[in-house]
Image (cartoon, rainbow, N blue to C red; front, side, top):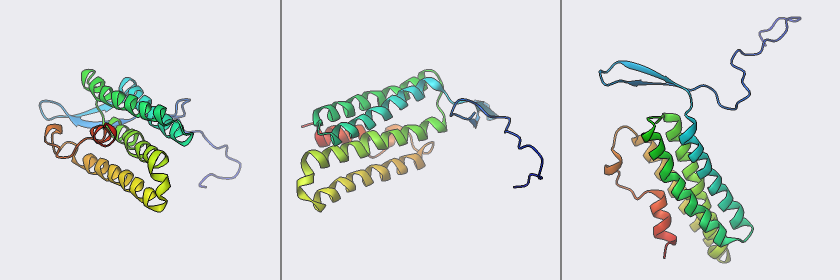
Length: 175
């Protein structure tokens, strides 16, 4: 809007064919100095993307009545979720972007997918009660992940008082 008539519009210098912008994070080194880390780390985020796909595939499978396939996809997502954090720590590529992406992926794979699977498989016959029960599970998963994200850097993972979502999944459906 601030362009003058007749002036050609200029493309931003950071145009890229990739849908990922360069990401800059500030941290501190061992001596307390500010350090800037650039980039989105591909390897751990590939595992997170695979986790997201497994959750999405579970939802699609449950919608199509393939409940066993949907449950297996959630189990695969659980394995992939365990790998992404380990790979990030082993390669020293942890980032705030990765933590947020992992939480969004976890919400799909361990919040929405199990809730929809439970609804389609067993709770849909209960009408609005079944829908409410499924929604409460999904809402609790979202609240748990939001609470976890606010505690990153403040509480160690061993001191985290709530059962992790994959553990929730195993406890709820693993019988």
